[in-house]
Image (cartoon, rainbow, N blue to C red; front, side):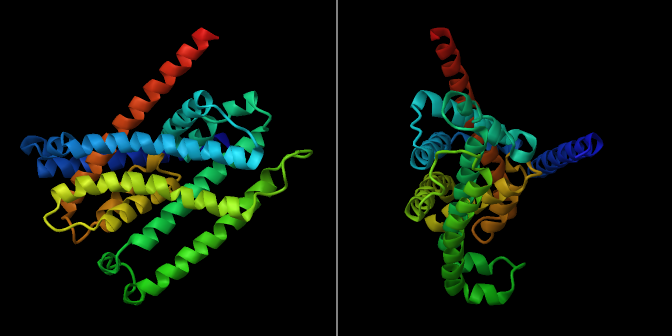
Length: 313
């Protein structure tokens, strides 16, 4: 890619982020959420503090699952003092353009372990694939038929046959995951590697099942906030499904640092019928602020931990 094209893409991404921030700020200003205290009211709820704790727990859990895959696939057992800082730094890298920060934060492991950079890169790809695939499975499996029917952009045939389609779609995603992992293994296996040629079917499907846990954790915390601001009963399954699909869309949107704008749009669309669009926008902005708070706290802890380790070394 030429330097001029790279600069153009960076400029377009920057303009996209600015446009999203301006649009959200304009929407909030029209609702006067600062003046009437609605945004602050959401942020100061006990459920919001619980969401921040759950967010941090989700990040650590994702790191533990990545460490587990390194053990299963490469027989590398990282101590918590290594994988936790690497996970937090990689997670903070979501805010870099193109999601490359997710990889850069963990490449430091290649210097300390008997792993090539290609193998570390493969482990990160598998990690992201597992998170996306499990999010799709959770979203499809738990999204109620009524919520699907409220999406006017979908053909009516999909909503009317949703129960049958969800089984088929979950089966397709679950079957595609081991195949995709095998392809990643083949593409990133360095010449002369002593690691077994491919991961087993049981271990890959087990990994996919375990990655449901982070979605369930943060989705449950999201549900606790949502039910406090909705006048209608909120199914926990719908809350977990909507947030899982929002996170998946945010990851797949390579042009959106940390999924900004994309995640908020999915949340607003997925909650149609439960809360109004202004409420959904307000909730999405509150979640963005809470996740920034959680990410900032984790990053400070990781940097402090690395500083203490360097002093001890």
